[in-house]
Length: 185
Image 1 (spheres, helix red, strand yellow):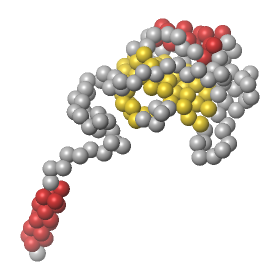
Image 2 (tube, rainbow, N blue to C red; image 1 turned 30 degrees about the horizontal axis):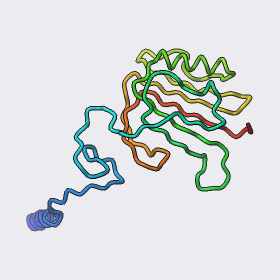
Image 3 (cartoon, rainbow, N blue to C red; image 1 turned 180 degrees about the horizontal axis):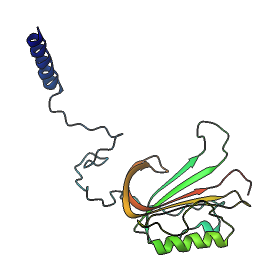
Image 4 (cartoon, rainbow, N blue to C red; image 1 turned 90 degrees about the vertical axis):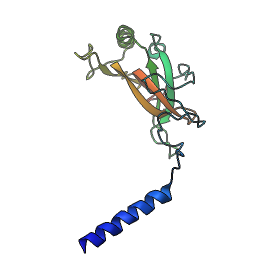
């Protein structure tokens, strides 16, 4: 009985493999390394930035001068989000800006500029950790604005939707999240 069951199971597996065939189509909504959105082969898997788009620093009127990062690095993605995009009530606007090729010295200078403008960092790193990473959460109690900084000594690869809704594969070592907060102004 066990032999018969094993033979039937093996036959079903062979039939299912034959039914699948050699169909190499890929789902464009999934992360398919080595395949570009237009379908041609793109074997760039060496950790380089795959994104060919260019982005600019956001220009919303609620972003103060000190919140502008002017240090080294190339912007590889920008994404605007709201707390709850499914309701008409928007309590805070959030913009994620990711950079590649940033330097820790410029990131620390940025953190200092935020502090000089009234932002406080009570829980984040004051200096880079032993592994070179730096994580800080700045907030300005007067304006309700927040700036979260994540600097990675080793670049990180990720796929994320940008502001236009395109799924973008990118490599970055600096992640800055600007948050408007719910205070007026």
